Every structure is written in C-alpha cells, then in structure tokens.
Length: 117
Image (cartoon, rainbow, N blue to C red; front, side):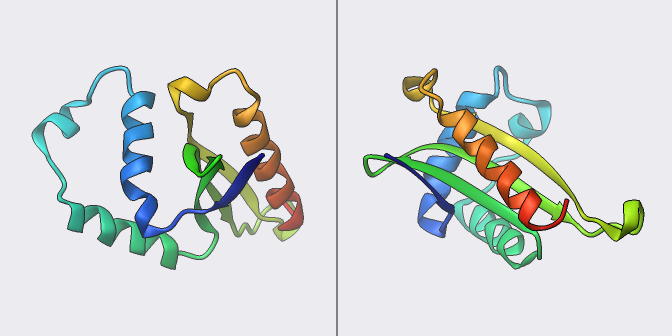
C-alpha cells in the first residue's frame, strides 16, 4: 500500500535522486553549482519552516518511490480563499504507471480543498 507523508531530513537523498530522474538534462545552474549536503539540509529546514509549504514523499513497501511539493498560499482575491500549487511531482522510473502519481495528485487536491482553496 502506498503511504503519503511529509518528508523528513532523512528523505533528502531519495528526493534528490528522484529529481535527477525528473530532469532530462542538467541546467547550467546545476552544472556550475554543486550544493553540499549541508546546503540541502539548510534549504529543507527553510521549506519546513515556511507555512503552507510541504515536501511530501510517497512510500511503497518501505521505499520512497515519489515526491511532490505542495504550496498552499494565502490570497486576498477570490473572497480571501487560498490557492494551491503542485511542483516537482516525480515518480521513480521503476514505479511509474502504477497510479502513484495520481494518488499524489489526489492527496494534493484533498489537502487544497481542506485548506479552502
């Protein structure tokens, strides 16, 4: 059974591996800069501290098989209803076409609805 949960610092290497699978080619920024593990931990901490900003992982049989970023943003328009954004959704190559991406999106939609988006 697939479990969707908030990412922890221990998930960072798995998330980064999934991001490498997401990118077809490395950008010029990635080629010119090599963040250290401490850089990634610092940024992960900043994300975790930001209200409404979640890094999620999909875990299947004890393995992180997917990830997604969900942002829920306060908003002054549309009756002060927040809006949601999904970014960096990726399922590992070996686990694609099993419906895991759909389950992550369903999770994001449910969370957005709960937040009043």
